[in-house]
Structures are given as structure tokens and as C-alpha cells.
Amino acid sequence: MKLIRRSTWLELAIDLRSSVIRSIWRRVIATMIFAFVIAIAYHKGLAVNQPILATLIPGVVLGLLLVFRTNTAYDRFWEASKIWHDLINASRILCRNIWIIVLVNNPEDRRRKIYHIRLIGTLIIAIKLHLRNETIDNSGEIKISKKQYLELKQVNNMPLRIIKWLAEYFGNLYHVQKVIPYRLFVELNRSLDQIMMLFSGCERIVNTPIPRPYSIHLKHLLLLYCFALPFQFIQPLDWFTIPTVGIISFALLGIEDIGEEIENPFGYDLNDLPLDRFCQELQAEIETEWINHEPN
Amino acid sequence: MDFQGNDWFKLALNLRSSVIRNIKIQVLLTMVIALIITIFYQHGYSGFSQPILAGLIPGIVLGLILVFRTNTAYERFWEGWHIAGMTIFTGRNLSRQMWLTIPDKNLEERQEKADCLRLIAAFFIAMKQHLRHAGVDEQLKSVLSSEQSSKLQDVTNMPLKVTQWIGYYLTKQYTKQQIDTIQFASLNRLLDQLVECLSRCERILGAPMPHAYSIHLRHLLILYCFALPFQMVKDLQWWTVPVSGVVAFALFGIEAIGLEIENPFGYDPNDIPLDKLCHKLHRDIEDLIDAETNQ
Image (cartoon, rainbow over all chains, first blue to last red):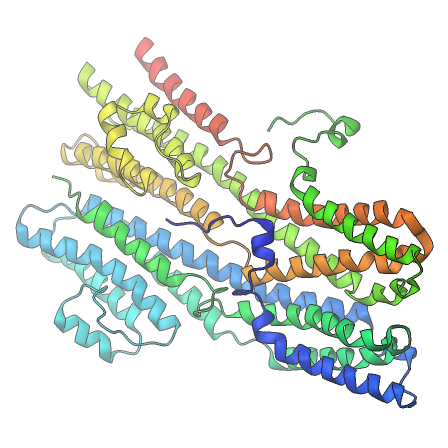
């Protein structure tokens, strides 16, 4: 497991790569241009000095709405992170249970057992692909048979199909080969159910829409607020109105943008969950910890 | 962390666990800026007094996201404690059940079982080291055989390896029919719980606050503190410098608390005392082994 290097305070403050600046600078410049226009109008003698406009959008209302927006987005992010880690955990447990419960004594059975332990790694990758709405491509990271690979290309819910294969394997061990007792068969199925449940949890996060009217209204309020700013500042600040308006709109639009950024945590951005890394780590773990150390 | 009495002043003056040490540069920088602005103002540049800049970053927005930041960090801290407690709880249960359900007919078997029980303590210590990105330490060596500790040195996930050894021992008992299916299943489930504790700790470390959030908060704090002197210089004159310093201390301090408790598995005085907890579980297990042997 690799962790995020703890960067120093200043490093993080000037790290522009994952900052929101990149996605909001156009909007900030737009408000500054507007402020510039107002400043020119002020110097031409037009009556644009209107401090009363400070009450146009009450700051408290805007502040609360903004923070609420970020909070709900963060909730989704945190829940996704929780579910995804539980998923890794459940797969570990399933690997361990197969490894410990299924006893093999001939090479064919052993091959099947290793194959199905690897299938769990594939399952996690399939879940990732499914959440990102992608199809499977054989990039060497997936070790499954040709026949199953072709089958996966056609189904529309890959993870469920793989879960079915695993269940068939367990059923075969219990009903046909009779190598595992009833109690342990239940145990294996319980772990599999756990994975299925967590997978449904991920789907729920992806499929739950964010109420559009809410975010649109917030955008309107923000625009009104930012465009009302120059009218308040023009008299005391004169030309300095322009950078000041820029900074304020940077602050507010930035908070709003964070909400947008983190509300879908399964994407590819730097601020999303590192799903690729999680998958690779699990696969590496399966290879080194479980497959190379067969008991008996 | 000992829970000492409620000596309010003693705690207030305790600088070791305070965040002051982490934020002195930020505070000093703010004060230097305030000083420069005050000097300019005193030399007649009255344009440096701009009370309107109080609206630059709305206080309520900054306040709310600052508090939100600290709260989420505290949640992680709390969850870290929760998991540490759960690890001890599961470790005790597993060791007790193993000691009671697995029969030992001779001294050799008993020795093997005792060694396996120590592996449970080893799991917790290995987990601690793993979360701190450290290797095998003295504490871990003291509960493992030298062969085992050299094996642990070159695996990526030490605690997982230890659960594998425990699992191997359980399978062996099961195939030798020392324990029946139900006992095997319930021991195995406790082992699953240990793996769960590990994964949950890894989650705390592996999913930090979204970067965009911490960066934006930091930008806002910097802007807010640097705008302070402009608002105050007219009223406070030279006092602007210390007052800016105090405000900066308050705000950067709250942010620093969030950073400090976000990762609760380190070595700081504010972190979970994992060394002590590991020692506790180890002692409990040794007690269990000793009590039986003495009878």
C-alpha cells in the first residue's frame, strides 16, 4: 500500500495541479472584465457607485448554501471511499477464505483454485470499469480464459457475471466434488454476498443524481453576487476594484467548483479516488501473498 | 495519551502538543506584511487604509469551511481510535477462543499453540509498523522467532502475512481434526475481523481530504490574513502588527489542528499511542498463556 507523501504546508499551497484554479480562471476573469467596465463607467461619470447593492444577495445565505453544497458533495466522496475500501477488504477476506477453506490434492484442482483466486482481482477491475462505463480490454492485467473474456465483452454487467462464476465454483465444490462442508460453503457465500452488496453501494452512488435545480440556482446566486461587487467597491477602491473582485470571485467560485469536482469520485481527476492504484495493489497482493504460498 | 485532570491553565500552557510550533512561520509572515503596510501608512500613504476589504473573503464562508475541515479530520481521528480498540478486542477474543478450543495433548503442541497466540500480538505490532511505513522493530522481534522476522522483512504487507500464518495454523488443526467445522468457521471469522481492522486503518491513511479542498482553504486563509492590515491600520496604527498576528494564529491554528489529527497513526503526542496499546495486547496474551501453564 502506497500512501500519499505528506507534503509541506507551502508545497500544498502552491500546488496548482490539483487546485481548482485551472477550472475556474475563465469565470474569474469574466468578473474582472465586468469590474473593469464598471470602473470605466465610474470615471466617465455614470452613477455606478451603489453601496446599497451589498444586500442584493445576503452573504449568510450564500455562505450557507455554498458550504452545504460542498458538504453534500464531500459526503458522496467519503461514502465512495468507504465502500471502495470495504470492497478491497471483502476481496481480501474472500481470497483468504478460498485459500484456507478449499483444500486441493491434485494439480487440476490447484489450477482451478488459483484461477478463481485471481478471478477476484479481475472482479475488482470489472467493478472499476463498470463504474466508469468502460468495457473490458485485455491490457495484460486481466488473467482470465479466452472463453470467459469473450463472454465478458458481451454482457452488460460484468461484475455480476464474474460473481456468478465464483458462485458456480463454490457450488461445484460443495455439491459435486463434496470437498467443503456445509458450514464453510455458507462462509464462502457470505463473503461473496458482501462483495455483491458493496458493488451495489457503488452503483447507488453513481446513479443517484444531484438535484440540478439546486446547483443551477446556486450558480445564479453566485453570478449575481459577483456582478454586484464592483458597484459596492468602486468608490473606495477605484481601480483596485478589479483585483479585489477577482479575489472574491475566486474564493466563492472555487468553493462551488470543489463541490462539482468531488461529487463524482470514480473518475480520473487528481481529486478522485485512485481506483487504478487500488486495483493494482490488490492484484499484486493476490499474486505475492496468496498464490505463491499454497498451503500443503 | 493520559487523560489528566482538568487543570485548565496547565493545558493552556502546554506548548508541546499545541499547534503553535507548526504555524509560527505563517503567523510571522502575516506580521511582517502587517508591519510593511503599517510603515507605508505611517509615511503618509493613506491609500493603504481600506476598511472595505473586510468583505474580501466573507467571514462566514471562511469560518464554515474551516470548521468543516477540522470536523472531518476529527472524524478520522476518532475512527482511528475506534479501530485500535476493535483490534485489541478481536485479538483478545481470538486468542481466548484459540486457547480454549484447540486441544493440546503434549508440551510440543502447547508450545506451538502459544507461538500462534503470540502471532496475534505480532499482528497488531506489524499493523502499527505498516501504518507508520516502518520495518520490523524490536517490539516485533520480541514476539516472533528470528526466522519469522527475517521473512517479514521482505514482504510488502506485514500484518497480512501474519494473518496468513495464523490461518495456516488453523487449517492445519482443522485437517488434523483437532477442531470441528463450526469452531473452525468461528475462529476464521475472528481472523476476518482482524483483516477488516487493517483495511479500515489503510482507508484512513489512503483517502485524505480531497486535495482541491485543502488547497483552496489555504488560499482563502492566506488572502484573508493578508487583507487584515488594510482594514485595521487606520484604527490601530502600530498595534496592527500584533493584532494581525493574533488573528492569523487563531485561523491558521484551526487549520493546523485538522492537519495534525488527520493522520492519527504517527508518533506525535496527539496521535494514538499505538506502542502502548500493542504492549497491552501482548501482555494480555502472555497472561493467558501463563495462567494455563501454571495450573
